[in-house]
Length: 396
Image (tube, one colour):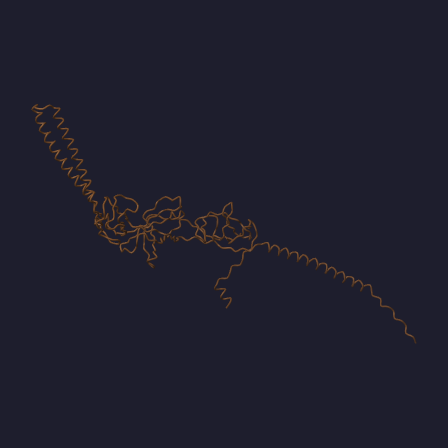
């Protein structure tokens, strides 16, 4: 008995529809996934491009300026009184009585000058004075006699007047001789070189037998005397601080030859005018030197403690943008966008500058801003670096 062939399986219409629906759904899902992946990729690329275009900047908060601050300036120490001693007469140095470093009193003998020419001139002047005195005595006696004879009309009035005129001329000649003798005696007195005030002999530039020329000329002084019981210190104060330094202000002096010691000084005078060449104010301080520890001509550090009259803030100098329109600061606003802010600059402290107006304490000021930074540019603030102690704890 032979087998009959089986009939082919015929899919039902419902099943075919179900397959078609599944295929369509899968195709739709694939299409949606493709579109969504492209959108996500595009948004990621756009965000990445925006992040790459957004600069990361470091910021710092402005610091409030101190109520008082120290100002250290170099000072030039000078004696309270100091004078070079010159000769007032010509001759040769006979002897000197004191040497450098010797304390002297006012009127103390410093040296003796030998003046043979002046001595001879004085002797001649004294002889001329004696002659003038004798001539005047004779003329005076003659005048008195002729005035007596005139009363009895024994001589003419003309002759009597001539005798009176001769007596007057002889008197004038006598006064001239007296003045000449007085002048030469003064020159004789200048043979003794005396100290003009109490002090210390700081310089001797002559020796026995040296030729002495009267008058003041460079290199012609005999001695130099300085009064060092009190010293003057001269300081050049820069113009920004000039108004803060006034007479009566206290200051401290520090000398390298006296480590660890501070000498109190007081501002006594100021020039009350700015020197145009240096834009500085000359200030004079004085310090007591009764113990003679300090020397004139020395260098000193002068420490002032200044009080700021206004409230100011300070920013790092590397935050300043120098442009033709003026100096600016780049400030990051709440919207993370740059605002270029003009400001009024005060004093320059080297690493920091003083800002008088234009910046607040809570502003985020960009440090080391690039030259290309523009107003309104978006930026990202860098995370602050961890403190050294925190960093050490993280490594442990």
